[in-house]
Amino acid sequence: MPTLNGTDLGKVTLESPTKESGLFIQPLPLTDSDKALLMDILGTNRTINITGEFTGTKSQIQTFIAAIEALQNGNQGSGFTYVSDLWPNKTVLIQTFSAEWQEANTNSLPYTLTLIEGSAL
Image (cartoon, rainbow, N blue to C red; front, side, top):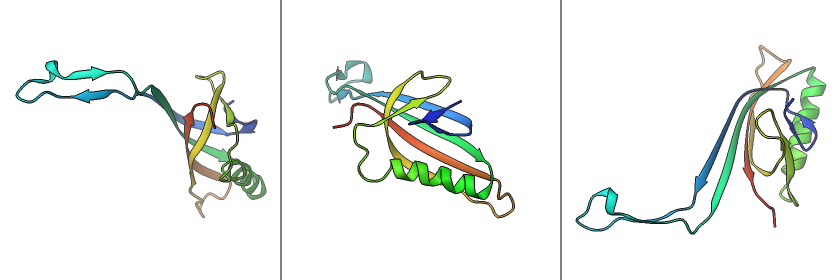
């Protein structure tokens, strides 16, 4: 069961992690790409995009939204622990949280979360 700082994230339908290297890339004039200068000097970062669905009563859905928004309050401190089937423990900050309330299905809240892994300052 995926959780963020202990908050149950419901049914995660897609978890898309991307680990990116901060490469310095300098192509050389009048040469092909195999001659470009590459330096791995800027470290790496991981972004975890989550698409999920939280199901419950209207009150439970409101509590879920409040819990996530309370974490993403402009002062995320030292970060939060994200746990999923893929990741045992990742320290993350919340970059984005969006949800889509559908009048035809009031017991379900599709949402997306974008988490950034790292050590918060």
